[in-house]
Length: 59
Image (cartoon, rainbow, N blue to C red):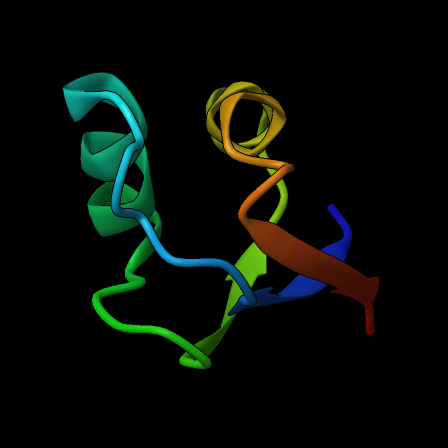
C-alpha cells in the first residue's frame, strides 16, 4: 500500500458533520496539521469526501 502525507489547508467551518468526522477519523484535528497514513480502500473513500479541505502528497 502507498503512504500518504495529508495536511489540512482549509477550515472545517461550514463543512458537514460527516466531513468533520472523516477528518477526525484520518487523525486531523486542527488547521495545518499533517499526518502520514497507509492508503486503504476505506481511507481512500474518506479522503475523496474531504479533498477540498486537505492537501495530499505521496511519500
